[in-house]
Length: 453
Image (tube, rainbow, N blue to C red):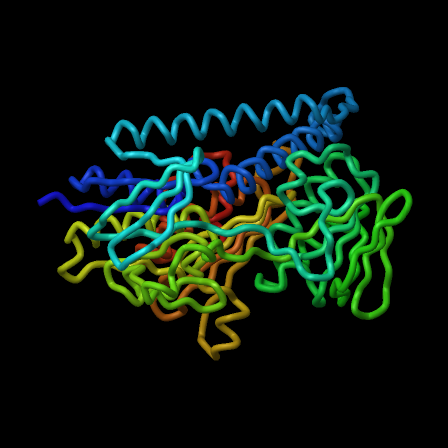
């Protein structure tokens, strides 16, 4: 008998589970209430990176004299940018739909809810109800921006991230609350667009979860570009003024600007799914899962942001694939589980930041013996050709075996270059494996070999 899989949520996790499940012979139904491809992905991740790319083009043109060109002074066109973002969204959702339909996945536009351990009811956009029986259920409903009680978002002066793709007008002075990955990307983005930017940093460094040396490099670049960093300033309130906003910090400091943007994390979309009624355990709204992404009910899986694991599209996609394989019986024998500690991540600031595996600070905190090597991009011919020698490559390895345990990259194309170290960490390659690889010259990748050596 054909295996029936019902998936609630069509983001990277749900899309991956659907396509792989269908390829393996399952009868798959995918229920999505917002946009195929996922709201957090299509309405947050992709437009932010597209706007950052536009900001990067502005920055490059502004410093074009260093490339032997006459300096030009381009200006942002919000209407043109808005059309660009809409075009990218349309292409991505269309391609996602085609892939799913090509795999004979049934797509239901509506909201799904569990009404029994194996039963899902979908309320479609036109109010109709349809019931589906499933052997396996996948919860991949994603997340949304967190809005604290002390912030009254209006989409005009006080914004969440989703109000800023792009904003109605370009902020003259944007106050960003939150110095994690999302916050620093917005600081970079709007500073590139020409806005004055202030950043409230609740602790004593931006990116508190990252390598302090990496965070320091980004802070230095922000200061060089005129960003106002307020360290130790935990946001506690936002007030509309006649022509802008006031943002209040716990220590009494008040920062005035024309707009404020909240970038203080996200919350899972788990309410209204009927989880408690069928016995699916949650913690702080996240579905508790094991190494197979199974919930407390073994036939119900969770993946993506709602699973409480790393909130990365790459992780969500791999979770979806692993779920499909497990549901279809491919993991009865021992196999390699998804290792979240080996997931590569990137921050699309300027310079870019990327890392993977064991961090230097974490190794020292654990009392673990490691070898750390660091090489600046300023030694690279390609970096000089690009007129951008900022940043460095840092590799963490085992001093006795040479196995690469982790690494960090700060600099141009860091998000692309980290792939080499990600493969090395996943495959337990050694520094000699990198050193003895014959890389192209001149490239930025050569710095990886020099750091390994």
